[in-house]
Image 1 (cartoon, helix red, strand yellow):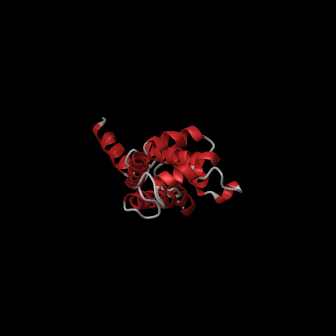
Image 2 (cartoon, rainbow, N blue to C red):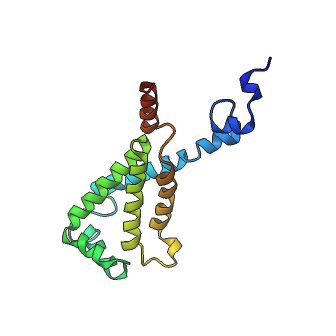
Image 3 (cartoon, one colour):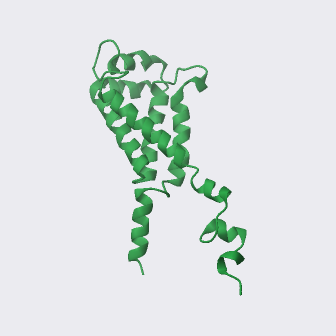
Length: 176
């Protein structure tokens, strides 16, 4: 008599229970390094802003968020977006910093992973269209690369080693 695990086809092993080979295992965990990188980077960027690292959260002065916004205004793709930020550069800076921390923690923990990834993509998109739009050639600007890095997580979410996966398993246990 054959054992169930030994008689499963390769397709069955890849889609559900049963034995998994190294390729299938690597495929399942492929987004984890991206999650860790983006999560740590965004948390770090947010705290860097809050603690006065590379850009101080002041309306004017050397190294301030206000000065940065004035510098990029004419070279941005959407000057009106920069004008909106210039109405309250300090508030805008705090909003971006807190958003980066929330997105970074959300993607690291895997809580509302698609929502966190969408937030990260929107932050990266807004920074690309304003701060790094004038970078030439375009591939020297990092915000576009970050935007592209968020997209797989927007599509896939955080299905493994995450609060989302834990919550989904709890829901499955409650459902008969």
